[in-house]
Length: 211
Figure 1 (spheres, one colour):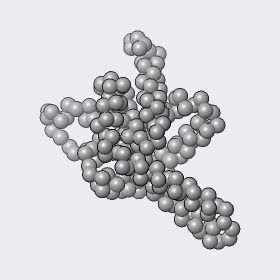
Figure 2 (tube, one colour):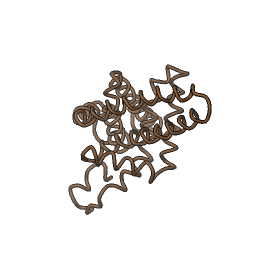
Figure 3 (tube, helix red, strand yellow):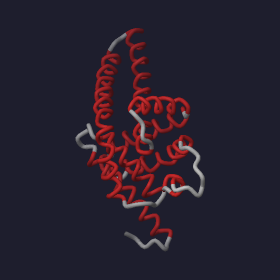
């Protein structure tokens, strides 16, 4: 869109792609049950097109969305149900008085941490690897604790973004894209550790995610 021969032009192209991916994620997430599918597609597109500068944003996003729809839809429904159920139970526990209410609330917060942690890792992992559902959940669970400091930082960033959009509705036009872009930095570092070593002169080594 902008001339690429200047620092300003490269920055504007970067921001345009980041915001565009964020907006496609927002639009694709409107039905709620497709939010996970949109997250998988958005992460894949952000990593491939923005970080590794390969492919075209719109084409890659909708291609990844279609490709991952069948496997992600079950997870989407499951996570949506769990988050709604936890919200109701947390509200109930918060309204209770005494030690029982406090203990219940703390226990539910821990369950929320587990569900959110698995959710945050599962979709980026799915965007890179072919795994069955059980292996996906297991890998996401292990990553959540193996990289616990990163997990906590990601949750903090997500909370800041949600609050930012809640108090400044117009931030929905750029915060989702910025969050997904920021996510690619720690996530790519972790995903690379899961990728097998391949000979540098092999066909696999020429693919974008090995650059």
